[in-house]
Image (tube, rainbow, N blue to C red; front, side, top):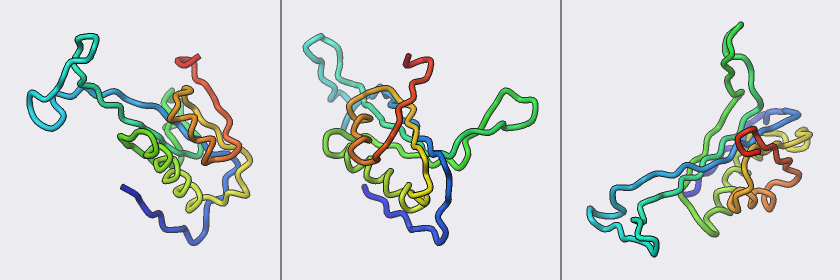
Length: 139
């Protein structure tokens, strides 16, 4: 599935852009029909599906005064189940969104908060100058 993002009449000008990338593992009851899950070499059923999650935003701000909660500024979310070459298409879609909504020449730095999974590393092929940031959990 490929989306086409209409170019904004006036693209946003931001100094910094943030990309958060991670994955979630979903346990399936079946793949196509009930009873079709098979056991792997370790004897466990092959019932896990990996969902890739990416969101692009312009930073964080306080949700309300005197609150410990924060919210993302202008977030846009991407979610996909994909592997191999489909990962490249996924990052291409994310890049197309960024290119159609932001003035790329005005962005000083793009920060990527993620672990170093192979599918996430593929972002370097598509978005130049990305700086990795590891959160406490991944450190």
